[in-house]
Amino acid sequence: MKTIKFELEGIYETGDVFLNGKHLDLDKSLKLVNHSPSGFSWGYGGLGPAQLALAILYELTNDKDFSIRNHQKLKFDFVSKLPQSDFHVIHEITYSKDQSHSNSLTF
Image (tube, rainbow, N blue to C red; front, side, top):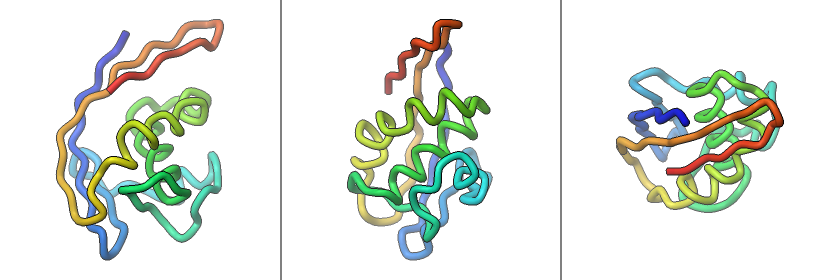
């Protein structure tokens, strides 16, 4: 099991998101799965939040397959619950991976 604590900040009007003070790159996550080419969003369970969840997981774990398999869980359990406004949170995820590709992700 590995736990990663992170700081996440979002500007609702522009859709800009900062992970640990670094601007989160939409294009990097779009290369994995193209949910929302128009950008990130949060506060509901749609495509913009799915893109954000994927980008967060990929940036934190640097694991393409793990991020693709688990981003919907992050979307529903965390990203969809953020306010539909500017936000600033400190949060953590705990995850495990093994060679059989079974994994777990908790918040």
